[in-house]
Structures are given as C-alpha cells and as structure tokens.
Length: 229
Image (cartoon, rainbow, N blue to C red; front, side, top):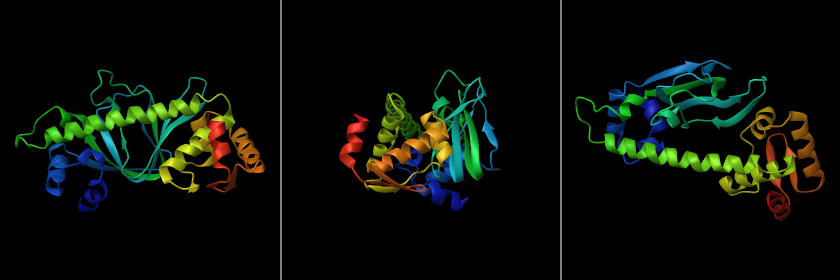
C-alpha cells in the first residue's frame, strides 16, 4: 500500500493531509486496488455508481455511447486522475457514460460512503476530505466548460485549433505530445478519423502546425489563435 500512497499523496482529494491521515482514509473507506485488462469495461451507461476510483497505472477512457453505436471520448483518465466522483453527492446515481480500460490498468477504489459516514474513530480529517471533494467537483465543471468550447466550434479546423491551444496553455510550450491516439482524438472531437487526419495535414501544409506522429509543433501561434476565435 505504501507504493499506492506515494502515487496518490499529491492527489487533490488528499490536500492538507499527511501520510498517516491518508492511510486512515483508505482504512476507514475500505479502499481496494483492482486491476483491469485492456478494453475491460469498468462501468456502463445507466450503471449505479457507489464508488470513486483513482488511476494508479495505465489509462481509462470515459466514453459516451450513442444508441446508433457511435461513441465519443469525453475524457482520458491517466495516473492519479479520479473517476466516479461526479455522482458522489448527486441524487442521480446512474452514470451517463461508459468507462473502459485502455491497456492493462489499475485503480484504487474508494466507496462514496466515506463522505457521509463518520468512522468509529471520528477522524477529524473527514471535513478536509469533503472540502477537497467539493473543490474537485468545481474544477470538473470548468473542464467540461472547456470541452464545450471545443465542441461548439463551427468547423473541425476550429475544434482542432481550440484543442491544440488548450494543450499549449497546459504545457506552456509550442512543442508537445498529444495525450490521445489519433482514433481517440477523433472520438473526442466527434469526427471520423480520416477527416481528422486530413485536416491536420491541411494545417501542416498551411504552415500552422507541424505534425510528427503524436508530437505537435505550433509554427504560427497567431494564426492558430485566429482560427480558435
């Protein structure tokens, strides 16, 4: 468990907690570590969610599955990211999304009941835990608003521009690796993969960006910002 704590100790959920307090949270909450295989479904649309998870190893995709069979990746979960937290304080317990493991993965699972039931030892840091969770939920709203800004763009080129500028701001660099595979990015932008590849190629020919596998170099930042506007 010490290796797990080394990973999660900097998670926002455990802000202002020391190592011993984190251990006590995991004990009181009866947290467990679960391993998942590639493409394994962790939960599906309309499943009742009673726990949250923290990614320990690997990657998970949060997917919106439409009734016609098409899908769109809402977000990608990587090490120390949290999933299932949005329903912790909600009166609606059924998830609207699928969560699927991308590659072999591992997650720490913590039941939601830890936020509502004080343990027998009356741990003082329960209030800190709840406060941290509310901060996480607020930050998630901001992230979803950013996603809406991307999808509200009128053209695919504009969507790509907004997305790349988001990565540019996050990395503070004009050269960065895209965290998604090409198909995953196409799903995220809600377009077909050939259309995405074609538009990236067009933007490269226009000397706006340079693309090499998963690496992007912004050549004309001003032009990219104009497209995003």
